[in-house]
Length: 331
Ligand code: CP
Image (cartoon, rainbow, N blue to C red; front, side, top):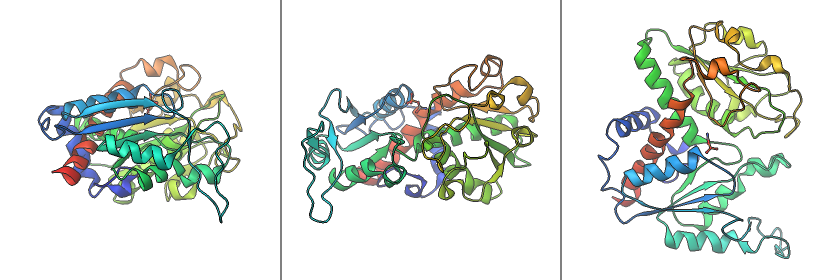
């Protein structure tokens, strides 16, 4: 694995899931792999799980870790390039260009992880993934996506690990598990990254007949075609929940009416009445979650909720990815 930006960087998703489960069973088995290697984690946005789980995973592998909040601990970074002979004139609030910043970080770090959310103002700009692209271009080091404008692959890998584990426990492998991604109400515009990524990782499993995958949301919240792919879209949430083994909740803002909140319809909140429509299904959410806005306490506090185990599995998804990059690039 050269970089970890999307599932396109993964040769064998099933092997990577198994690697995550192996790391969970024996966290320090590979603690020699990261000896004298340093990872730098750059955060343009807040984080609890990604920040701590990636640090922990790197430490489990014996790596040194440096963490920086861009713009607070460091200078604000300019990402744009000259266009058609028109140079970028840096007379605004950005004191350093990514060309220097990424190149310098590449001298200090062997691997670089970056979190940079969508700004939700300009769809084309967000979907160009400029921050990831510029660090890949200038750092000269493997880049790990810690949630970008359009994707959150470490979360999706942790979700795959969580679903695999729960399916093993349920021993329901005879029929493909039904996995439902449901939009949740929220007053604030949130990026599409988690939902996009979840579709991107679930669709190949659905195409291979390993799961049944359904996406449900109110009209106007259709995800970008390249992410929703050939997933079944069901506008009736109750119908989507029928017989579900896994319900994955997430809010996202509109892609078509970019970054807008079109509705906050509270009837889309996940309650125990909704979960009763499922096949004793498990509830998943990437966290953080606003209780009783998106999901009722009765669901989050029930045995059907997997959210804590899912967050715990972030350590093992990060460890599987870091291990793969260390083996590929540095062994
Ligand atoms: N799920 C997730 O990425 O959590 P954080 O934003 O806290 O890192």
